[in-house]
Length: 605
View (cartoon, rainbow, N blue to C red):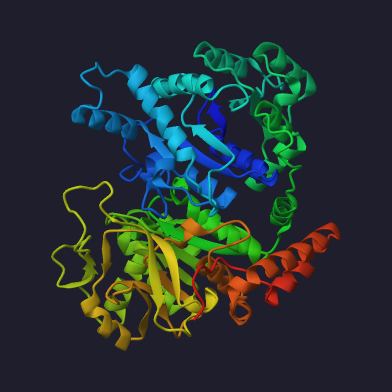
């Protein structure tokens, strides 16, 4: 097993996660099998109880692990399925060591950070790196490890020491350190400054780690004299210094690494010459070019409570992007704070209220993502009502489905007190209720989590068609509340179809309105399994409906799984030709005529 460790210096937010993912893409393109590990130095056991405002979205894995959003980047870029153990936290490490101490595994020794904590970290890395994540048997060839935070953070010190020991443990040729740092340009002098990176590398070396490769973040490509200066003071060959300058979309990052021959540096350090092939990234190049060339916009109103921090909905945004590129539309996300739509805002801040409604009414489609708590719920209900009454394409995810059910209960069934017991425990019409297996005393890891199977009960529904007429779909869940099964007959009489249910038939998973162009709500989170080139079927449906392509899409998604590889190659060749000829409209027409492919993952009926 070979290990590539990615660290960061100077400031946080440089893009270590995207860099680590892109390194994995390049290595995978060299015909190497790749797995990933993210180390988060915080004391939380996992990301499940952390606020999206504080740490971005909580990404959910197939096994129910609630993990850092960077694992979502790994899965999307590398098309792999990780486990909860691929996210290491200080909380997990200390908990495992303390559990061992309580059982007497240390035979009366004094338990210390060194060697017990550092040994536990190294053993965890070695164990998890051997778990196959690409659907094939046997371990991967390379494990890419990202160390969260910035060099010098006190909470990451045990991990730094563990990695120092680990580099000697695995030996030369099996360990490569990539350090991501900042090369800023001061407006007063207008030149690229190397001093922050010099200090960062000096601090890293003082802790016992020497970088093999420098990945320098900057606004523009590094000048040659700047590279030479960094090489001189950081003791890294010029050929091992790569520029990660600002790009129009992150799909260019693997291409930047390949263009600067970063794979050759990695292969040399890891002694993989003779095993690795020359990387082939035509599909990535094609996708990045097409994304840049898109002109025709599709406007999606994102109605939520965390709109001030886009990372709170990172996977939703990526799923929308994947779908919009497939539909040949330039994605424009209009953020709408759900509280701004509510009646009280009209009195307190009428301009804000009017602006929010103007944005909603101008949108081609409306999406209400998941969330917790009662703040802004009434605004989300109003958004769902507007979408239903005005025939605007609507996708509700998790809470977005639940509030659509509440809105229909109030407006169609004439039940004004209809609500979720999450927001009003004393409601006389509980159309959304707490799940019996949930816990009301412990918050962490007590929800309905991970991959669950949903069976399509109405084969002719849009959701089933979008999934290639599958009989079921496996998707990831994260919720405590569900639609009250006792009220389902009333809703069905009113025209709300529960087209997807769990294996018992008692848990409602997918709702649809048959007399609406596209009104779908799902209890699960389809965004977590969307991939570049393989968009989530329901997001693809939303975008297609929002730009007038849904009928064409539905006509050509029969036997979707069999068509996926064909459509990818057909669309790719047409797109490349169209791009090179400067005629993107040709490719737009081909997609509108039905050359779609979606991420349907069920068995055909």
